[in-house]
Image 1 (cartoon, rainbow, N blue to C red):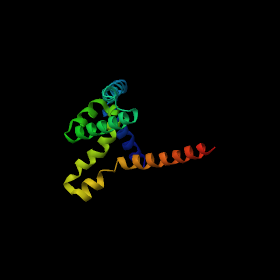
Image 2: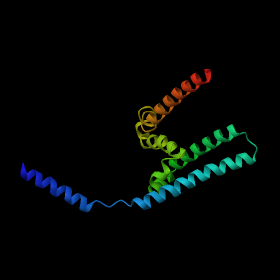
Image 3: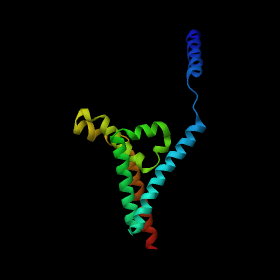
Image 4: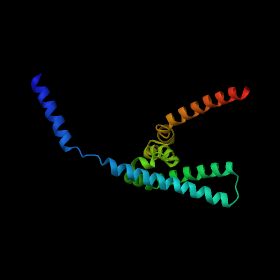
Length: 150
């Protein structure tokens, strides 16, 4: 028992020595900058649509569709993963990260066919986001409706 504990302790010590130290400050800065650039692209699309005299609702919808499309396209051609390796969490937060979360598993499992590969794996990551997002929006909608009755 004592010998096993010494082995485990020495393994943990060795692991801590070998494990690379995270570069927290650099990672935070890169996430902030790349996430900001992604958001700036979305804002630029919104400005162009405003110049083209679209309504506020249309601008929001079109910008969202374009950003999801860009995220899915960049994931499909392999560029989004390179950006994510460089930026880390900066690519997860914007809406393009959601598109990446849907497309990446679908691409990874396409060898297994459309039903058990693409269709089954496409929502493994995005599924919980959709479930809780839709559930929360329904609850807030009900609360808003009840409040508006008074």
